Length: 317
Ligand SMILES: NC(=O)c1ccc[n+]([C@@H]2O[C@H](COP(=O)([O-])OP(=O)(O)OC[C@H]3O[C@@H](n4cnc5c(N)ncnc54)[C@H](O)[C@@H]3O)[C@@H](O)[C@H]2O)c1
Image (cartoon, rainbow, N blue to C red):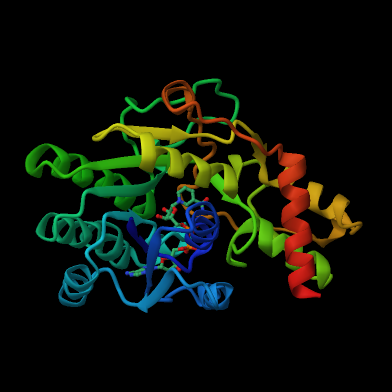
């Protein structure tokens, strides 16, 4: 089995490759990343000495080079993590999100069809469903309408629709997973949890948008990765699977928890100007993957956050 992993040196791609290489020593992996995210370069040397892994620095929107790689490597599966993901940057510069997240996905799927790749999996997000008020008890399932609020989530929703259209029109064997907010090792310092840990260590101000009351559903990255592994091996073609952490917490709670655990002072928190159109809360259920593929979360927020703090502290000390 030979698997192409795009966005391989990003947060979730790196964790996915580490997990899959340990679990499937007979598989071969090729990672592609354009290393546009500065922190992704730090993940490159995690794979020194791995025999069944090859890294190619490439952009998924470079159709000519992507086709060359597909022709040479003859992949069995493609897992597409590559994306522009920073919502604030998408508000300033939406075009690059359309290019990577939609055109890039189309280029990969076209190559799958051309070079007979048996399986394509698209990594998507709960953000495609749009937000709900923080006191809502609603949870979207896979049939809910898509109502993205910013160029990032709109580009991810667009890619999802394109994947479904390739299944129907061209018979591409594809699946989609839509997961909630991941946290864990190898995440960029642009994200709330790594930034909070780093700033606690350095006694620097911790910025929080607005009043800190925005709610996200947090999942430890390994629980997400185990869901992807199940979908790749047992998922049904043409299906979408929601993956929820079932752990809704507001940003202020998350930051305070890290501050307490690291024995720091709440005075480090600084409330900063909100982003336009900020989503209040995302909310999905993952009954389908739990029932059909017997997926279960293994990490509590307490255990996941403790592991995450330990990983960053060891790395930064
Ligand atoms: N982090 C989360 O909470 C979360 C939740 C749900 C879904 N997702 C999805 O998971 C995927 C990975 O997200 P992440 O958090 O690991 O982000 P990340 O930014 O850490 O990783 C994305 C990687 O893709 C690379 N990349 C960007 N544009 C590229 C291009 N044109 N060609 C090749 N590589 C390119 C970047 O350099 C980066 O290494 C994304 O598709 C994202 O939408 C993330």
